Image 1 (cartoon, each protein chain N blue to C red):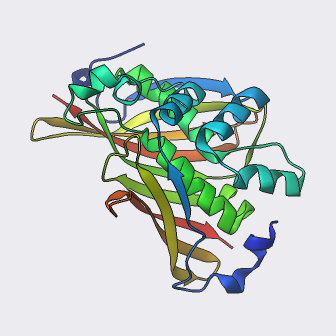
Image 2: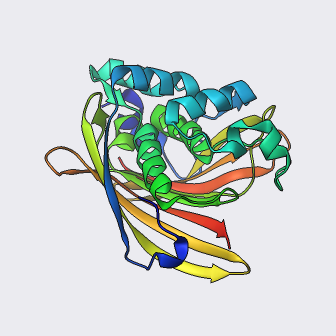
Length: 135
Length: 137
């Protein structure tokens, strides 16, 4: 579902999105970002942890796709809180809502707040993304 | 818990986090697009990107945050993954060929909470990302 920005009011709830990061996806991500620290830590602790930023990236991608932001939109800031490590093959469900919509100098300024939970609905991460969208 | 995270005395105000350098290329940006599913043409289509105000492709902001996260994981271990917070502003575009330096410094220690300034710079010392990370040690 996509909506025009004009139709999005503050508080608008975006559709929830769920995803599972399997081992293959995590390996590809770790190679892409050249992260050596997370695999080292996970191995030391005997865990199959997912890098925290891949959870955030998947959540944001899904939510931004739903908003159908036009080309030229600029991601200006990002806030994230990682509540606990996510493990490979965990299902994460994210819900998001528009926490700010304003206009300035030919731009929409949109802030989307987001919360990700596990299958027991316990929070695993939260965030707030601010994007500028040309009007 | 990792050795780094348990070494609380190491993280006094002013202490520098272990920095890292990453050299960007279009191939790396494309690889990140495939891994994250973000195929915005500003990142992966040089012809399209050349017609934008950026004049060429730029790296995903979340790729730069992944570099920051690696530094914070290396410095603080599990404490970053459990209760870590990041506030970051994207201030400049990172382009293929750029050498991105990721660095940080402890700014405050208040009880269990430790706050660090973090940033990504390019080879010209231009700030690409600036922010603050906070975690509980």
